[in-house]
Every structure is written in structure tokens, then in C-alpha cells.
Length: 410
Ligand code: PMP
Image (cartoon, rainbow, N blue to C red; front, side, top):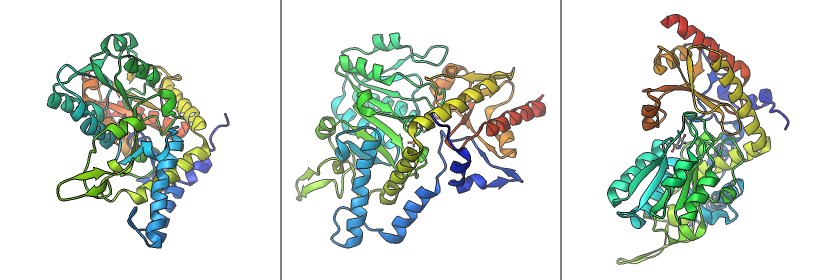
């Protein structure tokens, strides 16, 4: 694979030119949100300048143009993640969190009851963990967790024991936002299906960084967020198998999601509109398509290789520091482009703050995985996460800032 031309890529991201106290921004908080390239900003700006209108019901030219762009955005997302059913299998949501809630409310509240089990992993993001925990409390279904081993990988023997004929739903992260682990999701889905359970895969940290084929994984549901893949905030997508989405009740009620309404009764629109009540994220859908075009132009396999290389470099640099503890598996095919760590004796927040003094942006905290941090025995961790525009020189800046923090706290 040809390496990325990072210099050329960086030119498309105006924000990377920002300086703080005379130092150029080093942006290593991509697992939280990625930066937005000019083609995405331009596409959204064109929408507002040229064809802003409400969708679906318009007779006039602008509404027709906006409707076509909005509806076709579903086809583009379907194609991007290998959903051959097209737009009917793609529901636009606010983000991954809302996709998880949509399934939990529309499927979980109706289908689950006492005796049913929901199986999660110990590395779930709160987006799925808190959601299914609450659905469990409301329905009487029991929530169980697949253990992780000392290297931060899923214990698949435990998964095989835990998932039984009582299991109704398995929900798992594709790539952990805290450990960087790439989970064997198609194996998990197979185990779920062997027991007639459904499988929801949280792809928030996978779709931005690697080729994803939802049909090869055979996931029943798969979700991701636009803002973590060079796209805008405010839009995410839920993929669902058509037959399952068709059988599901709506999640939100209102305009656009109906076919016929009387004072007594309503009937539901076709997929995916049944799940998209009210005026949707039209500009954001246009921006998401531009982001997909941008990433596919670079090539998802090349993006994955670039991230693996940066992750390996960062891992090796941090591993060489005597007092740095790194979380998650060693670099390799089952580690994504992020590294979580702690510097002994320095709280992760203090470390992030010292880095910020040098314009190095990282995240510190529990990364919406509090139970996992409890298990790791730490309250917080620092996390450096990479994207298409990051360089090894920026990782050197990160390590230099760690040396600085050590001196300050020694
Ligand atoms: N799942 C994972 C693995 C994530 O990393 C995130 C974002 N931190 C989410 C879910 C939630 O994404 P969003 O905030 O866009 O809903």
C-alpha cells in the first residue's frame, strides 16, 4: 500500500494551522472528534448557499434538490459500509449514542422481559452500557458482561459460555475507544446467531479508520458517528437488517414517519423514514457524503495502515518510558489507532493540561468507560488518538511533553 501524502492531506484541514502561545496545534484527540476538511465544509456551505429547503414533501425546485441529496445520502452510506439493501437499511440518527437508544427503545422495550439476557463486553462505551443497563432494569432482562483478559482482549471462551439460548441481544464495540482493541466481531455475531440472539456492533471507532463490511460481519445492527470520520457533528447512522427494522416499532413519532393519520390511528412510513421523525439533518447528511467521498478517495485500507503505523510508533515510544503504563493489546492487526496510558504519579488531567501548554491536544478522563477504568484500577487515563493528518513528529511532541510533565512533578 502506498503511504499517505500527509503534507497534502494537512492542507485540506485549515484548523491544523492554528497556534496557541506560538506553538502549532498538535491534534491527538481524534477518537473524541476528528477535524473537518475543506471539501466537507464546502459541501455544507454549498447546501446552505444553493439548495437549502425542507425535504420529502416539497414541490418546488429547492425542496426537490434537497430531498434528492438527503435521500441519496442514505444510499451512499449503505454502499460505504457494504449494506446491499441500500437506503432502507440506513437510518440517520444524531450519533452512535442515539442509534443505540433507538434499538434499545424500539426493539428492547418491546421484545425483552424477565428471563431474557443482554450480553455486553467489559469494554463497552457508556453509549451502549448505560442504555442496555436501563433497558434491563425496565424490562427485567439481565445484563451480563464478557470478560477481558490482562492484555485487554475479549475472552472469547467466556463469550461462548455467557451467550446462551437465554441471550436475546449481544452488543459489543468493534474497536474500543479506551484500549484500542479491535474485537473479533464476526465471531461474536456468529455465537449470538447460534443462539438466535441479535447482535449490535458499535462501530464508532471502526468506520472512520478501516474498511467495514456490515454484511461480512453479519451484524443485525451497526452504528457510527459522522463527527469521528471527518464529517460534521449532529449526524450518525444506524444500519439494520431490513426484515428486523420492518418488524420494529418506531422510536420517535411525528411528521415524515407516517403514511396515514386520523384522529384515532396512524400508520407508518416505509423504511428508513419510519425511524426519522421530523425535519432531519439535511446539511449534515450532505457533509457526511462529502466525508465519505474524501476518505474513499484516500482509501480506507491506506488509512488503516497509516493508523497502525502511528499506533505502533506511539506504543513503542511510550513503552520505552520507564514510568508509563499503556493499556490494551500490543501493536498489531487487533489494535486500532489510539493509545491509552498513564504516567506514574501524575494524574491524567494534569498530564493533559501540561500537554495543552505545548498545544498538544489529548484527552484525559474515563472516556465514557467508567467500569472498565474501575477494572483497570485507575480513575482516569490519558489517550492519544490518530487520524489521516497525524505524523510521527507529532508523536515525538507528545513524548517530549511527557518528559516535561515528569520534570515538573518530580
Ligand atoms: N462508542 C464508542 C466506542 C465511542 O468511542 C463513542 C464516542 N466516544 C461513542 C460510542 C459515542 O459516540 P457519540 O458521542 O458520537 O454518540
